Image (tube, rainbow, N blue to C red; front, side):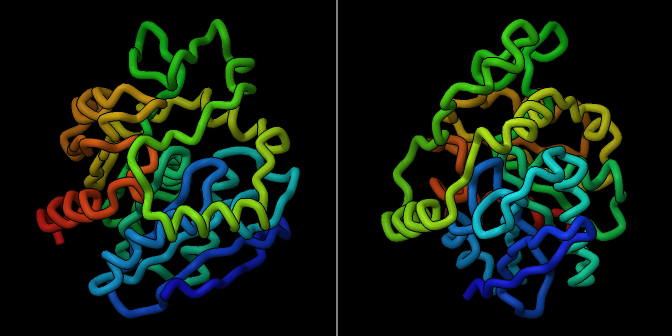
Length: 265
């Protein structure tokens, strides 16, 4: 159902993406750091009847090329722009899990809203480092222990059981196409230092924030704090769910997204 495709970026990196290649409004899904498109298969099936579903393997992840180049959020946003332009996508529903959401916010800040209709944020606050201005950071990350804290094994963020077949496929995929966290460390520390609140305060399109109630990475109350930044932001909590909402609770995620989209599509 998801057909593997690829393109070469303007800095000569091969990026793999998957596309149902059907007619209909496009959903563009962006995995978090270290993750792959495989874990979006179940949610892709749910959207397939009514939407064109596209999911990218970000550079250094999944089947995309490993490279020392572009370990920054702005380059990830540029990769999205190149894919969107290549496919001439319009009225996109952009869905990002974890750093994938940050990639979308970076895209908005650099390229604007012309091709986007809505954003779905899966368990990613706008700021990762807890300080006096923001209390909902990543685990125990503060300016005092940044960036060394990010060198540790931070876990996979999973709380609920994931479909066995999809999980096993993802495991085989990760063995065949391993992710090297040490070699992508610069991307991790840049992701962690960003503060996207300025983008969200001025957001011009609707955004749904879905937070995993049992996420080991974030206190789910961050979603309600985001809702206060802009009237275009709506927060919902996914029960019995960790950080990988699209893989752990695909049906609940699908229902929340569909209900959200009914308000303006």
